[in-house]
Length: 417
Image 1: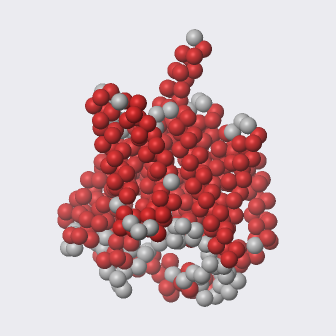
Image 2 (image 1 turned 180 degrees about the vertical axis):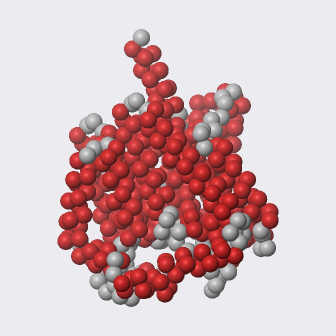
Image 3 (image 1 turned 45 degrees about the vertical axis):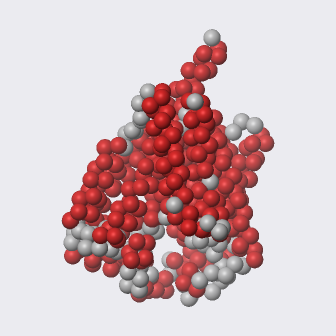
């Protein structure tokens, strides 16, 4: 009975890593209504089975080092919900969006059982991401049609921006950076020459797809993420990154055009009139009206506000600024405290792992998570279930590694004896 329950949860966790394909297939199927429910049903199935295992085996649930920061964040956003919810249904939707996906951290932390499962989870994620990247490259080849708002009127050299199964080039970019970080770490960690080449090939294909998203925010985050990989894993990565920075603009001139336009006075003027700078300025003005507790959940700058107040709401393209405007100084401070705890626990987990494979793989996951946090400075990435789910899930996988390593070491010692 115990083995059956453990096997069920093991395979259910693989579905989480295949989130993007499962969600897309459901949205395109005759049961499209399930697209907004399937991840919650999956979560409930995992948790119910987990509770049964706890009762049968008497194991103690793990909480990890971010439990207290998470509880503080929950308490603060719930407090804001209680005192500033003129539209109760809107506030409830935003409260759910802020809190629900963090639960995946506890799922992964408690249910990742061994070293092989960590590897399998990452391999499934890499296989899924490869399919996503290949389809994105196909979109670029055929010149898939995109909304005119995805490209500034002054940028005439860009014919399309790929979005694959995800629907947004910027969200695809964030997904790909996490994917590339894990793929490259897997390449560094693998011992067999064939596996090394397979992982490197997956990373290169995703890099090519990332270029074709033409997401400047994702490009910048990718650049800094690979600097971290070079510092923490292998200094030669920095040389490869430098060569790529020099060659890519020459091979794909529209990359150079898009970056150079971002540094031009024309972009500054356009952004100040109706782009990010204008939206950030507007957010700060709203925030000044209620600095401590903000405007209230779901009332500004994000997906819930856009859905609830069509025609008057827009995305502020900065999750931290959006959160501060809605929940005030107390909400943003609680979230930043949570993020600091996340970074501390992630770094601590990598430091506690002695197993070479897990250490390198953990470093790749950690860098990918840092990249997602950085991308949130120019996008509302945590508003997208795909990104939020993967962030908290892989954080749980990372924090579980020292425990997984301990179990693995005990098994090896037993076998040797």
